[in-house]
Length: 462
Ligand code: ADE
Image 1: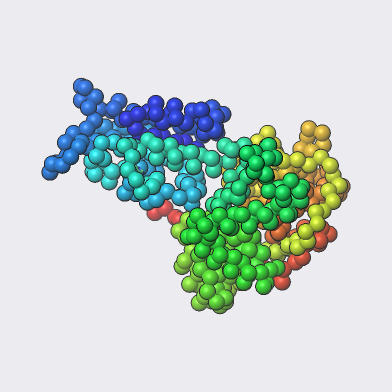
Image 2: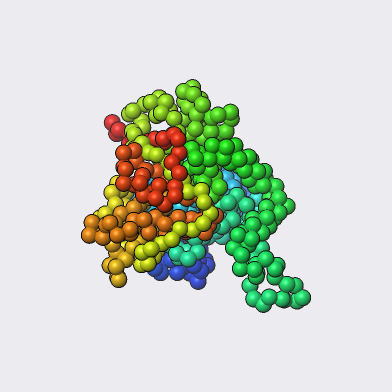
C-alpha cells in the first residue's frame, strides 16, 4: 500500500514515523510512504504558498496552485483517494481505518494557516476527516495518526505474531487490563486468575473486564455490543443453520445492519460479504436494498432470495452445505509436520488453489490463518480459514493423498479456532462427497439448510 502526504513539513511526517513499527514496515517494503513538499510547487520566487483571504478576515490561506500541482505530481492523470485533514471532517474511526486499508494508494493533504482555497479542495479531495473535536496547528499530526492506524491493518505490518484481528474495537469491546513482571509492584499483586494457567478461566476474566471497562468508559460501544449479543442469542436458537452469521458477529467483523422478525442482514467487514436470512421473498428483497454499496459477495440462506436477484447483477458462485464442529475438545493431529505458512509458500498456494485474485491468497497467508503440511522443507498441502471465518482452502499434493494429511490439516485448523474460543465451521460444495465424508469423520454436524454464494457482476463499461 502506498501513502503520500502533501505537506509544508515533510520531515515532520517522515521523521515522526521513521522510528516506529510503520517505519520498519516501510524499510521492509511492505508499505511505502513519501512526503511531498507543497512549497516545491510554488511559482513565487520566494517560495510563497499563502495569501490573504478575499473578503478579509484573520490569517492567511494556502493557495490553490501549489497544492494542485503537488497533487498532480503524485497522482498524474489518475484519480487517487485524497483525504483532507480538517476539524470539519468526519470523525476518524477504526471502521474508517479498515475501509481505507482496502485502498492501494492514499493521498493525505495537510493544511496550514487558516486553511486551503476551497476551489482546489473541490477539485481533488474525496474525503474530509477529523481526528477529534479540537483544533491543531496543521494536518501533519492527524495524517500521521491516520497512516499509523491504517498501515497497521495492512497484512504483515504487525508481523505474524501480533494480529490486529484480536484487539480492541474488533470485538466491540475495549481491551482488558494487562500485567507483566514483577508479580507484585508497589504492593499491588497481579490478579490471581492470570497466574492459574487455566486458559478458559483467563478468557472469561478478560471478557468480564472488557465489558466492565467498556460499560464505564464507552457506554455507546457497550450498547452496540449488547444489541449484537441479543441478535446472536436469537440466531443461536437455530445454530447449525446460522453459524456463519453467529461467528461473524462474535468474532467482531460482523455488523448488524438489519434484524427484525425473521429478516436479518449481517455485513462482514473482513470480506465485504452480506449474509442474508429472510422470512419470505418480499423480506429478502427489502434486505438486499440495505446491503452496503461495497458488498462483493452475498451469502444467502434461502433459495428464493437467490432466485429474486437479477442475474446481470449477481451470479451464483456455488451452492454449499454448512458444517459445524460443536465440541470443545481439540482433535488429534496425526501428521506432525504442520505449521503456519509464510510468503515463501505463496507461489505454491497460488498454483494449487484456484482463486481469481491472488492478493486474497497473499492476505490469507499474512493474516496467519493458512497452514501447511510439510515433508521436511517441502510443502505438500495446506488448509486454513477464509476471511469471513469459514474453514477451507484445502489442498494436498496428489502423491501425498490417502495418508490422512487432509484430515490432519483440517484438525489442525479446528484446534487453532478452538484456541480462540471460536466455533469451527465450513462450507462444502454440494456434491463433493469426499469433503462431506471428511467433515463427518472429524465430528462436524451438517446443517439442515443449504447456503448460496453469489458474486457481484462487474459493471459493463459502455
Ligand atoms: N487540522 C487541524 N485540526 C485538525 C483535527 N482535529 N483533525 C484533522 N485535521 C486537523
